[in-house]
Image (cartoon, rainbow, N blue to C red; front, side, top):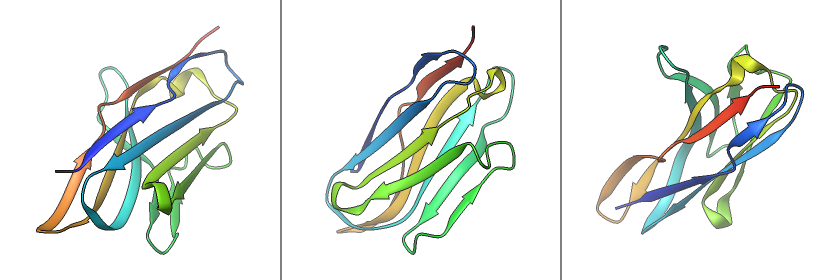
Length: 119
């Protein structure tokens, strides 16, 4: 079993910044990809940012230039630095990590962390 623990959400004013973290624990052999998703009320979950084991990075158009995804391989942790936040960034943010464990592959989700952008 691989468990993910997220942290860093909260309430911030428009234009502010937050940094989300997602740490994976368990018998992890390798990690293929680390992604951040978000889901706003009444909307489908959408991919916000992704980073692969080869450090290939992709962003949703709505967050390009404002959000930065990064990873710490030694800590099996992925981060999402969010700057210039807008009210439309308000959502529950989830991390998703895929990789290999001793008996196969895993595809795990974090518990979600609320980000609210409001004045």
